[in-house]
Length: 213
Image (cartoon, rainbow, N blue to C red; front, top):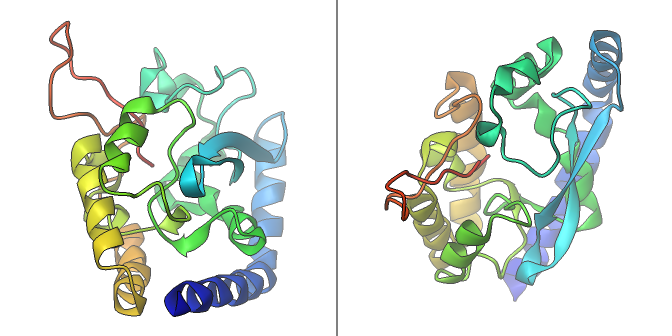
């Protein structure tokens, strides 16, 4: 219980500092997005939060406004045709995730935790239930993100989320926090258009994939 209080306090403090210090970057990215393509600056998407509650995650828009909604990127016939020029840069550098600092500040998310699943990623949600990974606030980054990110099959990703739950504490959060910087700098595990898939084949013999980012 004490750790949860400390964790929430740190989330508020870090997100507030982040919103202030990163405001010049926000302004530059907002201008770049508006100049590059038509549409809103932010992209909102329904995700699974603490104890399976739903909330709207915020991202800088990286795709055209005519992109099918609530569809994982890899399931699109040709994902590249929907991703904007600025969007490619934002995704590669993970700068599209910066608006989630507001999600952290208001309590939808934490700095560290399992990445929030899409509301309709039923296999991923069910797999995470095995490890109680849906019982905590989802995070901007987490143990799975510094150990594979988009490349992870959902069963492996869920197992890593479970490892985070099992060892959740200040030491684990610090490892995830600084490990994220190294992962982003190396662009580890970033696969455009996806991916993340189950290790087992489905009824048709094809592997089902879900976006894990």
